[in-house]
Length: 434
Ligand code: NAD
Ligand code: G6P
Ligand code: MN
Ligand code: MN
Image 1 (tube, rainbow, N blue to C red):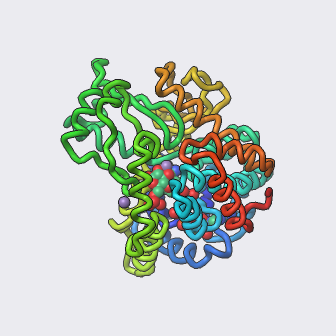
Image 2: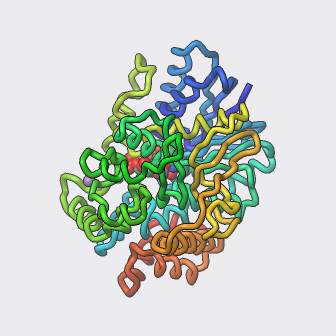
Image 3: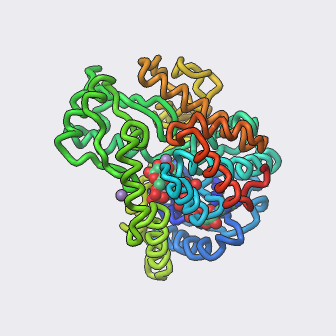
């Protein structure tokens, strides 16, 4: 049987993961699941951990869910390690969002100054996890969901020297589900090709005869509600831009393609004491979810979890694990080493692309070069990520400053320096490298 270890087990997403494993048990015979958390997260771990065990007890399968604060005990002989942790919990995210907004800049979980600081807090922790894995489960696969998922996955390979890693995101899953509906097709009747970076990818779509249907989907996006992830405000893209590129951007591109409107929306919510930033809204949803999880009669994932941006996360995570385990070679959108799939970036760079997932990991499908308008963004954003990763590993202030200056959501100048210094101070306890 398979041993699964989930780091950040106290996450409200854990029932989503359990549901995905239960659904796939026949092809992925799990023996035990270890949910790992830290002292700060112990209460959440206990509540959601008992909920997870009830879900298995209500299923036909005999799986034991272990709860522990001892990561090393859990990692021993693991087959798959999944990560869904948040260094500093939601309070840290509140700071990532509020500090830049208080200076009139975008404040977002994975973008701009906040996204950079989430990477700075997370990368040292994930590299420690990798060191433990080298010792305790050298053959395991690491399935990373922890944000910023692309940078974290890149750092695992580049600085951790750990190649058996796959980075995941639910955004492509949601796009494939909603777009096939828009043109009244089954997702199986369409071929999706994704390329770019995590939270910064584009895709095109073909039918099974090889006809490009991207333009048809773009047209439909403008006459119907375009199923937005719950966490992103729905400012429409400029249609002429999308038609020009004949590619569909991801929801997060709004921060770059409609910066002005997105910033205004974020500032409006930030300034409205009844709304607040996304992190403050999520705190509320999380509290509601944990109230539900406490109910000893609840043994199914509650509907309210769909209020979180990461809905359908398990479709990516559990399908990836099942595909590796059973060598299924399923096409899945993952963060993995480019290896030539996007010739505009280095073969060593981690990109988010459609890839065949099997026993040997991810084999990215060639996408080809991008046109100048997309290529310019892509190269800028990847190199911004590389500066952030280097800063996270070395604690070098100069390279962090470079990341701030390059980042398109941070106007360069004195205000950027204030934001930088305030965030360094606010997150001091989680930034031992600085
Ligand atoms: P959360 O705030 O509930 O944190 C999850 C758990 O991580 C908490 O119980 C916390 O105590 C624990 N934790 C913190 N530091 C830890 C450490 N060093 N070791 C072990 N556990 C630790 O977070 P959440 O909202 O459930 O999100 C979890 C993570 O998943 C975040 O990084 C989030 O950005 C990410 N996420 C990714 C996607 C995606 O598409 N890839 C989607 C949704 C969420
Ligand atoms: C998604 C993204 C995640 C992100 C989440 C935020 O859909 O793929 O990477 O963490 O939304 O959702 P939240 O509910 O925490 O704002
Ligand atoms: Mn994501
Ligand atoms: Mn909103």
